[in-house]
Amino acid sequence: MLFKKIIGAFLVSCLFSCQDTGLYEKVVFLPEHQWTSQNNPSFHFQVSDTASFYQVYFLMRHADAYEYNNVWIKISSKLPGDTISRDQRFEIPLANAKGWLGSGMDDIFDHRVLLYKNPVKFGKPGTYDITIRQDMRVNPLKYVHNVGLRLEKVK
Image (cartoon, rainbow, N blue to C red; front, side):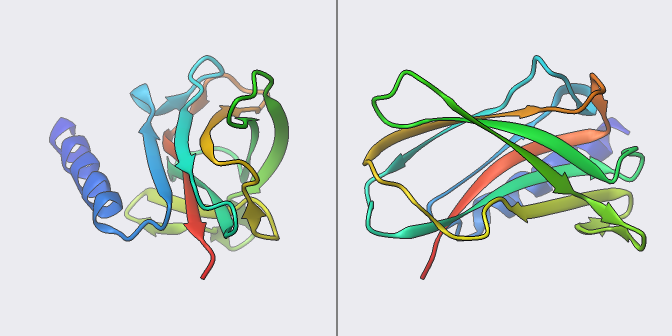
């Protein structure tokens, strides 16, 4: 079982490191496959091109045993030079009546969910800080392997 987890982690890191990720992509692995309200993954990225538009994606990997058809998250964002965070709450659909919406292999499912319908433009150059919290009524949220953030420049 431990060997399977190690191989899985290696394949995930290789998959994400080998792709052309546009501007930014980071995945945070969750201890014991549980997302607690105290474990809030943070993401820090530089933006220098303020003229371009970007697609922003939430990434999540979970086991088939995940008990819900969605996940509620709260994203806190801090602009360069700001001390105040802005919070936004999102409901991320993960399944419908036909099953999981993401891609899967064996009993593990990956989701890449676009957060905003329209591409985002970053108005200030500098370092952006994003924190993602699970905002479900259950704590810990079991069977969640990792969560992440991806930004792609719109071509």
